[in-house]
Image (tube, helix red, strand yellow):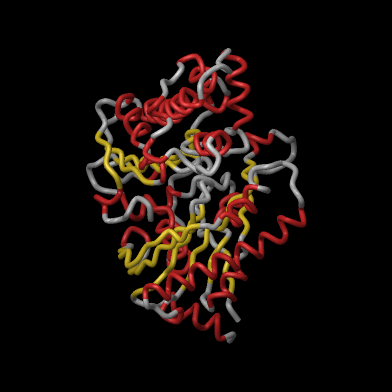
Length: 399
């Protein structure tokens, strides 16, 4: 037997498994690296987050990804090169993190890599007859495996699409395993570039669980800041938006799109919600005169209304507690807007559940890898739309 396959078999039969989860989001702030220890699988999963770091990206990396991110027409040679470049770059960051932690690569069983999304194309967005849902993440797992010497699982979203999903959001699988609790309805709200949430019912009925994108989180705010405030990548502490006032006409124009009327679950991305979308909304609402600060305040309010509108529309009067994660939770004005729009809701973060909110997405991909190795598909009930019962992850061997 191939010795790497033998090692994989041994890993699957271990009582405890050490898995590194990786997440690189659309904000391009850096690579989230979570070193996790797993016992069990399924609803018996027990996890310990042993180390976590966000390794920052340098300016060269950011500009390379931005040159091809979320664009319908790009230099195909550049995409080809970056697939290898990002994989090697991530391998180097993993090696540096292990060195800082004083941990040998041989002590890590598996890496779970999300990759770098460069285009997300659900059929509901591209609208091309006869063409399937699709999504593309680059940063090939073989390069990570070879660069670290560690078996790597990657490309999780492709299996989701192949099995009838839209490739996003995938959080429902990990959220269910790690955060469900008897007699407590929970909303696991992740505010990344795109905001999404998972509903976890307190009766633990898997047929009632669902996860959905709801619209922009940080993506439009980040893009606007980067264009109008050179050298700045995001609105730290809401400093820019707090100097302005949101314009109701602009917010209404931003909300005027069929996406917000589509049934749940659904998915979207910066391919729709981008600066061209903002420019059109400003033109229609006659708000092109607004100051950058007022535009930022309006984009902030838009994200909050999209999130809260989805929650109230999908859950009605149900009682629930919100647990936050993702970069948007650090935006004080956004959280203030959410609390204002949902005055009866309790808003916390996942640190209270034992997982750092900044590490949560990386931990979720480590969880998907653990399930791929030792778990069984989670069945969310018959005919559950867009939530296929599958195990995800392609395996790359380092030798």
